[in-house]
Amino acid sequence: MGVTLTKAARTAFEITNELFIAVGSGIWGIAILANHGLKHNRFFGTSIIVSLTIASLLFAFRTNELCMPDRKKFIVITGCDSGLGFSLALHASEMGFSVLAGCLNLESEGACILASHQKQGLICFKLDVTQNQSIENAMQFIHDVLTEDKNNELWCVINNAGVMIFGEFEWLTNNLIQQQINVNLLGTMQVTKAISPLLRKHKSRLINVVSHCALATLPGLAVYGATKAGIYAFSDGIRVELAKYGVRVVSFVPGSFPFQSNIMLKQHDHSEEMRSAFTSEQEKFYGIYFKKYNSYLCAISAMIKQPGKIYMKDLYENFENALIAQHPKALYIVEPMRYKYYHFFFKYSPYFIRDYLVNKFIMMPAFERPEDYTEYDLY
Image (cartoon, rainbow, N blue to C red; front, side):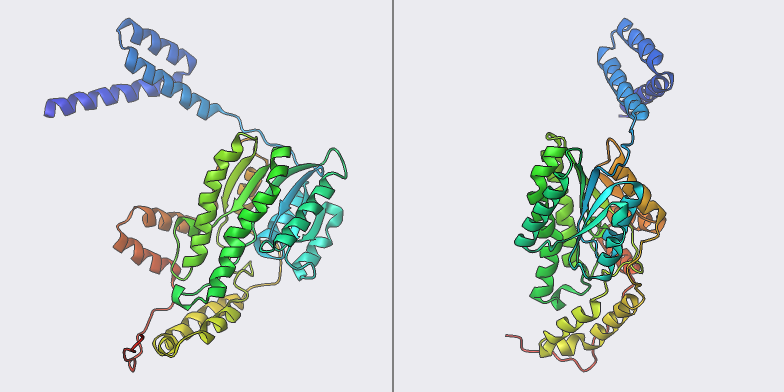
């Protein structure tokens, strides 16, 4: 057994050493190793080394040229009233693209700010991703804009519209559950389906905004995480489907910026809806905990500013690469080092350690069982 292991280790070392030499020496290294292998009748091993070396060199020296922005290149973004969509619309316009910014409410403060940048190629249009008629109207608007000039091009579509509602799953009303599914998951699918003919025609790219919750769903965000994981899976599937038509599909995971987005702005209203739907048993069991939980969240939402561009350097560096790289990656993740550590341990730790780390990561108020609670006859 020991002899076998020693021989296997020696063989692995020789292969690694030859591969290192070949990569370091480039074409000459490949030629020398191939000649040496053929002379000593090591065809199989030599073929592996040569193949790995060529693949390594192609990867190391591949070029990823950038496509230059142009006002004739149009970017469609959903959910631009505030937060990430608002910021990406402004940034893409500043880069030199023309931007068609889909807004739920054209009278919202964010939409009005974006509309004031029309001279910089930024145009707002109404879009409710949960309404078929609104999507149809939006597609007609986009088609009309693109056909105004034969040189106009649909460069990219960014599915960003999203709703995030904090709350343990039992608390969420059917309305709050359905709202997240309709906007986040079905909305993304419906917009993608409607605009697919234009994506194919212009060989555009499609960027679907996912979330860290798609990679590791957090307590209190079970439904939100499920919708984002669904988008991630959806992107994986259509990336292969659309590639043969020249359409590139990217999953984009932005960083965390809770104080620069109003995605939690309606948390108080949502908590009131949850509380009003409680049964007497739930009111008794969750009362104190529910109050602490939502007081904590509402304090965060109260700190949210009015619509403004998110300040996050890594966000825009990754966004620009996804937008203008000739060969964009399939997945972009923007995350601080703290997130990297946590997500690494979330993925590779046993579940009892992972669940402990998840609770430490999210830092929500702890549950306290009411002292006067008695079990109810539920049925």
